[in-house]
Image 1: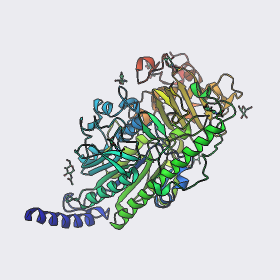
Image 2 (image 1 turned 30 degrees about the horizontal axis):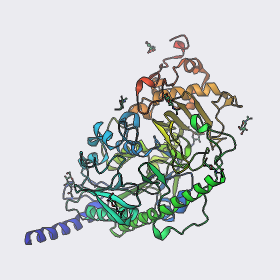
Image 3 (image 1 turned 135 degrees about the horizontal axis):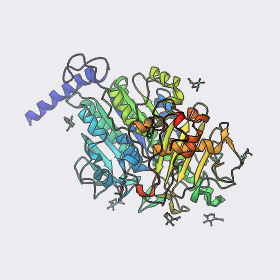
Image 4 (image 1 turned 120 degrees about the vertical axis):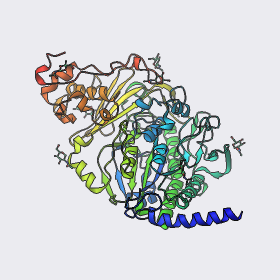
Length: 580
Ligand SMILES: *[C@@H]1O[C@H](CO)[C@@H](O)[C@H](O)[C@H]1NC(C)=O
Ligand SMILES: *[C@@H]1O[C@H](CO)[C@@H](O)[C@H](O)[C@H]1NC(C)=O
Ligand SMILES: *[C@@H]1O[C@H](CO)[C@@H](O)[C@H](O)[C@H]1NC(C)=O
Ligand SMILES: *[C@@H]1O[C@H](CO)[C@@H](O)[C@H](O)[C@H]1NC(C)=O
Ligand SMILES: *[C@@H]1O[C@H](CO)[C@@H](O)[C@H](O)[C@H]1NC(C)=O
Ligand SMILES: *[C@@H]1O[C@H](CO)[C@@H](O)[C@H](O)[C@H]1NC(C)=O
Ligand SMILES: *[C@@H]1O[C@H](CO)[C@@H](O)[C@H](O)[C@H]1NC(C)=O
Ligand SMILES: *[C@@H]1O[C@H](CO)[C@@H](O)[C@H](O)[C@H]1NC(C)=O
């Protein structure tokens, strides 16, 4: 007893010294393990919500997120997930890889879920493992991914963590009586506590462990509350439960009637085009659903406040990056859809992304196009860890000068996002339909002079939206009956030929070909943007390019059903169009 008591006192004392020297000031070195003159690495607090929209104004009802992260940090308003469903998106985020490279493409086996994450060998190749190797202590509480459950949680345990308290299935999406599983202990249920408040308490306790740890290492703390996800029991989705203290807030709030809400004319492709208009009964149900989402996010807003206040009290804000995002977005009534995600519409893929920390400008809003696969490379960059050469993303410029540099290159810094999906559409709530073929490849491209979405479905239908003139994505220029013939001063078919060729590269891209896809088509390096590719010089080349297509709608990534996998390479005007 005596020995333990002594040791504890010693560690506490050491921890205090360490947190002063190693954690508070980025420029001071820790003599304990880093050696002299090595600047200490920054800490990370990573907060990820579940199904939080950017386009349905949810952030407008989170004043504390706005105060701590918006006013004190930088907001990336063109940040995208690359697959609009929880588990695959989280795996892409944690590995820095597109879903076509993780092949975790669904929420449950055989194509996804935690067992697929394990069988793909990713438990050794993801963020916490790498951060520990780089000298971090790592902690996580909340939802890791779907299929991480009472039967799979220890088969094996997720690698790379010093402390964990996970929400696991089938109790992940219960705001009351959620199932948590701590470190290597068996799962337990919490019937009397509100899920987000439990995540809040566990997160603060892990932060405290991290700060007081005896070894003076920097830390990563992941915090993953389930709000504003639907309550989900046996695949039935019902509106989220707010905390009792928030359930009477915003009594008159209604789902935003965006420009594309319940449109008079059908829109989209495939099964979405055939949806009926929503009647008043359904719209009222949607309004209620929306209100409960906003109410359920209030506990997250408080969590963010508590986390920031804790870091402030410990004097750690100067050496800690706080990131806030969501796994994917959400729609309610857009394109006549029931509540849900899984689509490539802007509401589902353009998600909140804030970062605050040392060197990051307060109150800045950035237009650079960034994605979830960029987040791990960004953390590597900030922690001074050498980038892995198999990342499909690249570090996001976050410091003031790096942002300006990237902005100067605007278009050519990055203007594309590759979005993909395999499986079925899931409409949530009591009016939703299930099981529609929802396998597609999509491309978002957002340059200085254009703003476009293009997609090819497993039914071989196409979508093409000019989001400069049609931000609601209501007028599909790729429909044979489209009334518009020109886009960017070229015939639609010419623009589509470029987008399709880019999508063909992106759907099988790996590492640098994901971040620099034009270099596959134009290895000579003279084309780095859509604008340049639109030159008439290349009309013949793009006309002859094999097209993205499918032979069948599959539920997973079955390459034999995904048409051509590679295209032609442009190697000089003299070679084309005569060269085949
Ligand atoms: C965290 O885990 C790593 C890897 O097992 C270990 O080296 C490190 O000492 C742990 N940190 C603490 C504070 O226990
Ligand atoms: C809470 O969940 C556990 C595990 O699913 C279950 O056994 C228990 O009956 C539930 N308790 C309540 C009060 O619902
Ligand atoms: C409204 O639409 C829903 C879903 O299609 C349907 O179940 C319901 O009967 C409709 N209500 C009215 C009043 O038409
Ligand atoms: C981006 O590039 C265009 C030229 O393509 C230029 O006109 C514009 O000023 C640039 N924007 C910024 C923010 O540098
Ligand atoms: C084409 O039709 C859409 C509505 O379907 C309309 O908004 C648009 O203005 C029309 N464009 C032209 C060029 O007529
Ligand atoms: C989905 O696609 C498959 C294969 O292409 C087809 O057999 C099936 O009928 C489609 N299902 C629906 C609901 O359209
Ligand atoms: C992805 O996983 C599925 C299920 O195991 C498998 O059938 C498919 O071949 C895999 N695709 C690729 C490209 O590895
Ligand atoms: C152009 O590409 C073709 C096919 O990849 C190759 O055979 C040919 O040598 C290339 N020509 C030049 C000049 O690189």
